[in-house]
Length: 252
Ligand code: PEP
Image (tube, rainbow, N blue to C red; front, side, top):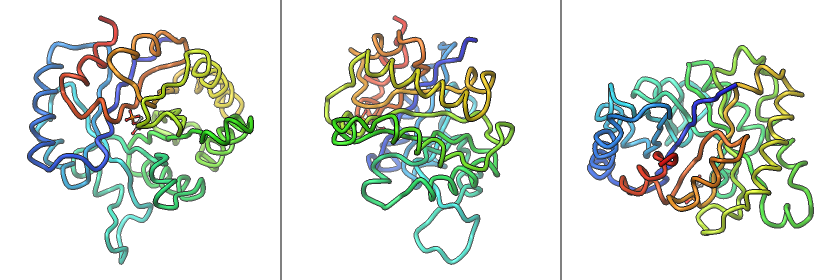
């Protein structure tokens, strides 16, 4: 089974609307001739419709960094899945470790968010990953098992609209520390087997599993060469179009 590589940029809380559009247009131009790779950028909510409009019809897709699980209501400050979808986004990053760490997200809230995304046709990018102390305590696989199983609890494979998993060891995010190829290989194989156990081999074979954590132009090739790595979720190195295009062009 060949899975099309998926390279995603998480722009976190960076860039004004003007700056986001500028980078998005640069990426759109640089990726005009590219094929064989799916590209997604996730700007802030505020920039989402502007960026979606700027890249419409190009090779660049757009995603949200989060969502609230209710469709509408008195939830001051929140943004819903249908609103995100209407802005032109096709993906939603869910359960990023910064959301879990700073905004109290849990596997249960992640599950509700995946439900909201799936119900309105947004593809969820479910982020999972262990902290350094969990790895040191040899709890990595238990943590990942729970994050995935609870995250997709109650879903049939037919409801998951191309679920994408992003393995992001928390200790490697924004730290410059990348997991070794052996560590990534071991975890991605584990995740593929876990999806097989939860669903089926067919579903696991088509589920893309991304690696995230200090991915840069100079380490992406080695990471993408690992059999069960189907793409990358990139933070810092996606903010600059030249750096991100070098990651998107990982084959060169
Ligand atoms: C991320 O935000 O998902 C991420 C992996 O960040 P960075 O690439 O900066 O480590």
